[in-house]
Image (cartoon, rainbow, N blue to C red; front, side, top):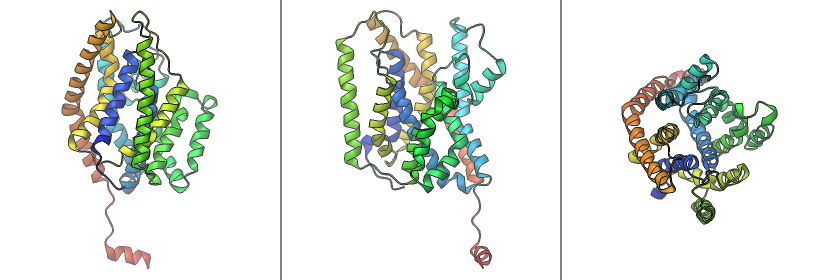
Amino acid sequence: MSVTTDKFAAPGALRMALALSVFLHHTTKFNLGMSAVLIFFVLSGYWVATMWTKTYSKTNWSYVTFLVSRVWRVAPVFALCSAIAWALLWWRGGAPENVGGLIHQLFSNVMILGYNSLPYQANVPGWSLDMEVQFYLVAPVVVFLVSRNLYAVLGCVALSLFAPKLGGSATVLPFLYFFGIGVAAATHDLRPSRRLAYGSLAASVALLLAYGSVFFINLDPTQTTALAFSSKANLFIAVLMTPWAIYTTRQASGSTDRMVGDMSYIFYLLHWSVIGAIGTGEGSYLDRLLLSAEAIALILAGSYLIWLLIDRPIGKLRAAWVSGRRMAAEPMGVAQAAAA
């Protein structure tokens, strides 16, 4: 994978922008959070395929190493943010008496899998992490098939279309085609040109500005319902912005940008609990604006502390463990003898 330098197309900054758009989805009428999540899935498909090809496939017990590493990457911070969510719920008296099966709650609030099918979700954005972990389970197969034939992506599309008959939203199937797009971009070295990428970004921004103008023209502080970008509109925006998202994966990322990218994951998981505790949907429009600004400051500060004290140290341990499982290269004489 060739890497170029376009500082404006910083990959970590894009991920934080996507996390912020989900925040806006939950605090304003600007309901474009689903499009951001779908773009996250594209990026996930790309990076998982890249890591599988370049790293995990070259380790001992590659599939097991891959699963352990990916769960190790996402579960500790997820479990911590789940604990924070429950603590804040109890603090403000919002925890329900009946939350469903205790074992299911405990397992899914730590290991993520099955979170989207919980009868009560303390941290609603966690549903997308359930889809992520389910994708990890099938990712090596998807990478293998798509890398052999680009048209295998059509199989991902077909599975997504038939998802309602195959488990629906409880499974990763409705979103598999976005993961598949990312996998295809990685395994077939699909590179949007700079012109296409910036055209994708410009078209997306123009559409969002047009929507924003409608939002302000029709602004009514007494109403809490969104102006409602439909699910199809969210899908269209995600597709429109996909070339830009893939373009950013080809750009060099400095230490600060990588930190911002890592913090975006924590920001995404923290924001729901914080906005609920602060009550960003209460009061006048100005009150809600000030509360939202306070929430962003708290979430960023919390995200940085969790990244510095927990996520980064755990990440170093995980990287060292994966590195230690890489298969040793055979000496030249051994390889030649085996070939003979």
